[in-house]
Length: 182
Image 1 (cartoon, one colour):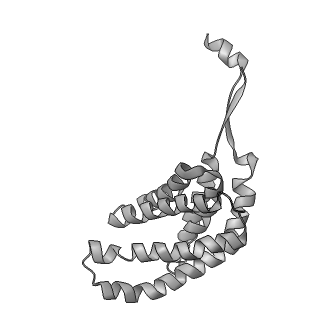
Image 2 (cartoon, helix red, strand yellow; image 1 turned 135 degrees about the vertical axis):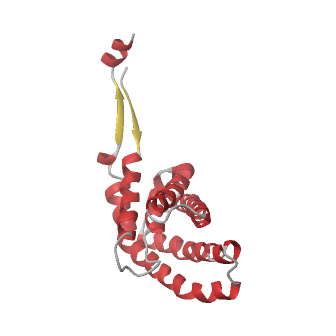
Image 3 (cartoon, rainbow, N blue to C red; image 1 turned 60 degrees about the horizontal axis):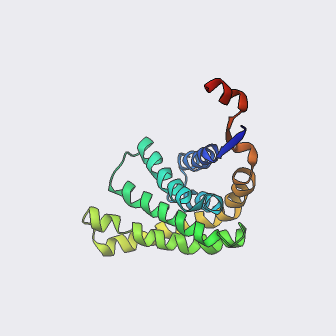
């Protein structure tokens, strides 16, 4: 009996590596990062669970290697996981186009920043006014990153990684293997 089970594991690793490597660039502008712009193309293909896990685990792995885990990890990982689900639902019946990446990415960034802004006030007793004032420049840089990466990176990743069958890992079971197991 011949059958193949394909996996997006290698593609996820490529996507996570793209985010991870970019976020490690020294002296990059703060909050200018591609996470959402990488989640969006993957969400088009990998369903609700895959989309959640891509965003969630992307943050968990990054924090594990860089800053360590903290309350911020739980909040941002869950937020990116939920953005993955929202992206999947948004892209389910839409093209993976620059226009749609921007239509989803801009409001998603605003919602993400509004929620994650509360990390300081909730977990560190930061005054809400201080969080709001500090959030303005933070969100502007995050929006700029979302726009740049949604135009340049999201379509490229969708075309060259997500849709590329060469990056599918296949696990084959052939009749000779099945016969040897008997």
